[in-house]
Image (cartoon, rainbow, N blue to C red; front, side):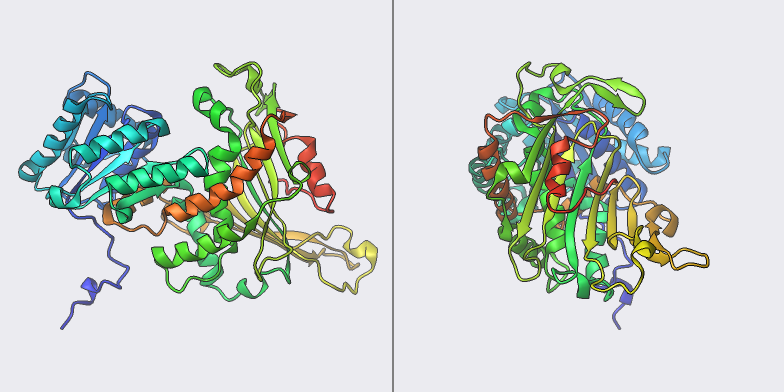
Length: 505
């Protein structure tokens, strides 16, 4: 008789990878210290890593294993989501290793290859390894070529699986994205390349699929017959910090719209997949990305902005041009808003308003689906003055949840109807805290699940949206807005011309 607990369809058992190693390039950087190492500890604390597991750090530091372990310990303690348990860290620390060297150093990569090979006898790891490129995109080519030269990217030579994780931005435009796709596919096999977009690891983003396709409530009205417009907002209250060297060459559209917000748009607009697996979901997302239309009049239907000195959360903050290492005449945008369309039967005629910006009043990422007003209201005009559009709002961060806004009678002797909200919050509805995005995504890499990872075709389709806009914007000066405001006035005017307004998140 088959044990039902071992049924591969039984979702009660956690997914635990085979014995393997995680190699982190750029392990002394912010991403590794603040996100990756804490995520590894949290996975270990939840019992989701195999007993035979190793972490190898690679960076230009004159360190030994003990120095790296100290850094990793401090990073895990300060950034972990779950409670600190010394016994969990002790098990991890036994297999934490460091390989010093530069990316051009052949000897260092030969040493890394030997260290991975030695894990077979030392830790019972049979050649399985994932390489996380937590490094600037400019360094991707040299590292990938080193991995190919040493045979570390070759599944057959290693005796196990070899996977690579590539952080965004994936390329600078369509041409460079294709070059990078060719490069990673030459070094690794296509199925072993994981292009990470950490937004797809967030519970609320995954819940878009559950909300739409596990319920019969929303799907009948999820189309142009009932939807007036869709707004996707990603607002940050912070500035560029120490990222001037990177950010000034990229800007908001390339930094977050091309990846994060295009993926959110695809999840909102996609058709129901035939199955909840990587191939089926990517197929439907790609149809949406290929159906996106950019405005013919770019300067009427897009707005670029750049923040000036202002006040955020009661603190005076500098303008973008006053940030350290930003050129005095920089025309890089820190805010962008655009009106896009999706040319298919479901969404024809529905505007998708997308905006992202820094130094906004508060940090929030949300998707708001605004429905058309009822075709006939039998109430007196004054009774419904306070009634707006029905809205379904999916909050991605920081207050993860879903809000439904609809009209209701105000208690009293008269028929007065106004908007009220039904609010669902993850923190109140579930006892388990949501895992960090990198927890889920690192685990998916180690078990080989690509459901939440965009493929090369999705990346290229997203660049097909952004590239024409970047070409039209070239040489133009961004609209100014004060830090602490919701972007330039021109962004409000863009929607006002169509009788709409941005939702105040």
